[in-house]
View 1 (cartoon, one colour):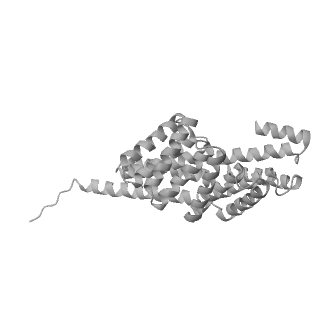
View 2: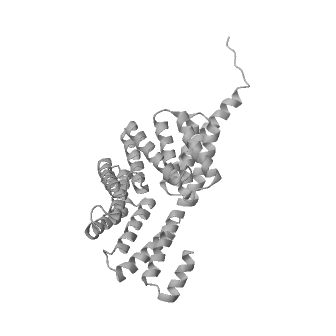
Length: 303
């Protein structure tokens, strides 16, 4: 639909008309969601150049595309460029819309995710808390944007070792998502998966397996639109299988994770390499088991 609309706008209004650029930006969002990061970057860069020329650097449409580029660079692992985009968007939004506007708060939340990934947990928590307070004030406790930030706080608390705080955040986010979006929505399942990882960290392997199986069952019925979500599940199922000493299943899931990462991200991406290392560990374990099994038929005798 976007491609058809884009062709029509280009023909009727030209490549640099605002309606054309809006569709270009939307195509970038679609490509990003589908995992087509190269296509997304091309669309965002085109939209950004057009918006800056037609509307200026601080127009809301320009800033939205700047924020989208930040998300894209973040997904690509280019954290320095992502931070630059987020900071530019945040400064622009604060100037034009104020500190508590939803667009401002969205970028604040995104900066929190970035700082978290950089290991700057103190600054990440500050961003999350600011975003959460703003969202609760303007949108309410059960709005999707509020719940996303609550989920992010859960991830942060888990990384800080505050497992009780993490579980509280996840349970609150999960209850809100199930009520607002249903049991099988992507955001709901993401929090279910996070709870699985938390239970695993707590040593509750049964609880972890239950959460991961719930996600797997849902994805089996309705594969996620974002392929990265399925790859993350393959990782989690691999680790869960290893924890419960189901090594054949662990090897299968790590193999699927590696194959998917290589296809989506390329052979040199860090996650592809990590998946290959996990797979090789299971292959080596399988080889050692085979060697032990081959030797079991020969009994030794002592004098």
